[in-house]
Length: 184
Image (cartoon, rainbow, N blue to C red; front, side):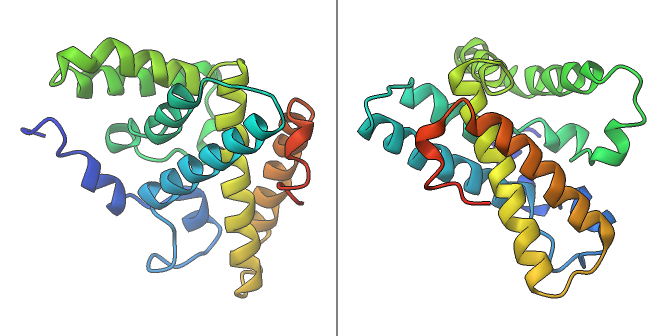
């Protein structure tokens, strides 16, 4: 990664590992980049809907956090739930992701602290962090529905769908204004 932004196109070539484990073919699996675009797009829409209902979140920071929430996967790859369940200390994955991102951002010193703070925001229990997580989960939920509709019968796809649905319900309790938009 000689050039500071050379990692970005790499995200297009990193498949979402959980879908591979669920038997979705390599040519059909969404990439981390595709997923990140969905998450950022949903976060934008969610912020706009909330604003229209009088609830203002930090729009700029939420969008930036959504965009870079998975950048570290260039280094550590996408870790599916099956891997995360094997790790005794779940926060160690987040620490590794943050450390990987920090290393990547050393080539952009003027942005390093801001982007690390945005990554922290995306993974925080703030309104903005929960909104990014809602977008993340809803993207996963819709992707699972799409794979099932196109013929996936693997139980892991259904497990991903159920897990995403559970997380979405938890986050929708924080954002009831989004219930008409986030349909399960």
